[in-house]
Structure formats: C-alpha cells, structure tokens
Amino acid sequence: SASFGDEEAQPLLQPAERRPAGAAREGQRADSPPSRARPLNQAADRLRRRGNISFNRGSLGRAAGFYTQAIAQDPGDALLFSNRSITLTKLGAPHAGLADADEAVRLDSTWHKAHARRGAALAGLRRHAAAAEAYARASELEAGELEAAQR
Image (cartoon, rainbow, N blue to C red; front, side, top):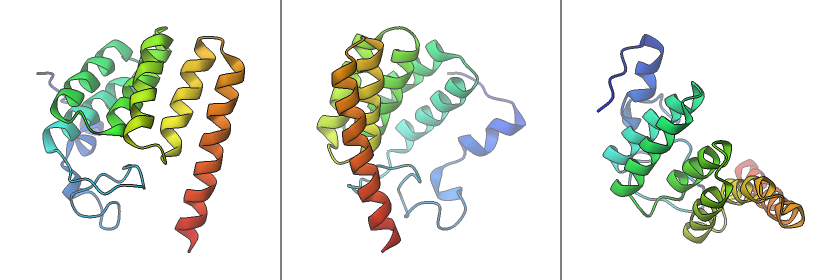
C-alpha cells in the first residue's frame, strides 16, 4: 500500500463524511454522477482519491493502478471507469481508454463526463467524427444537468 505523507494530500485522503457540509449527500462523493444515488464504497473511494493524487502529480501509471484496484472493490461505479479511461488515454492506450469509457457510459448513460471520456479516447484513436458525436452528447447532458441544478 502506498504511503502519502504530504500535508497537502491529507485532506484528499480523508473519508467523504469529513468533507465540508453540503459538499455531498451523506454517503456519496461530491463528484458522483448526478443520475444515480449509490452508497459510497469506502475502500474504493480511498483508492480513487489516491489515484486522483497520482494523476494530478503526473504519475499516470500509478494512478491507473489505483483506479484498477478501486474498480475491483466497486465494479459498478461509473466514476472509477471514467477516471481510469482518461488516465489510460493520456498514457497512450486509447483502445483501453475507450473500453473503460464505454463501460462508464453503460453504467450511467446520462452522465456527461462518461461521454466526454469516450470522446477523448476516440480522438486519441483519430476517430474524429465519432469523437465529435461523443463530445456533442456530453455537452447536451451537461447542459441538462446545469439546468436541473438551477431549478
């Protein structure tokens, strides 16, 4: 298991329940896809947060490993597949990134970010027309999410 001693990383490694009030519904991440309310898998969430730290530091291989471990803990979480998708795409493995994006879309077809990840992977494969379609779908869904949030 990796050790994170950096002071700035510690808030990211705290359980979701310790986030500021209003950041997320109880038992959910603040960044959960909006179309579903799933209980938080604490083990998967901790691994996801470690993956996010690694991703933000540019340690993409390490991030992919954390996301893979998180998926093993919670294989029904679209966010985990979405995060690993963009990581794999940035690592130069857009075929694998597309497979993860497709799984994220399968798990939650109404979440804009899953479609955006699909667009990124398709662009990496130089399938530009399909990428444009995926990005257009992501944009439509995001607009709907913003409209719903304003109600």
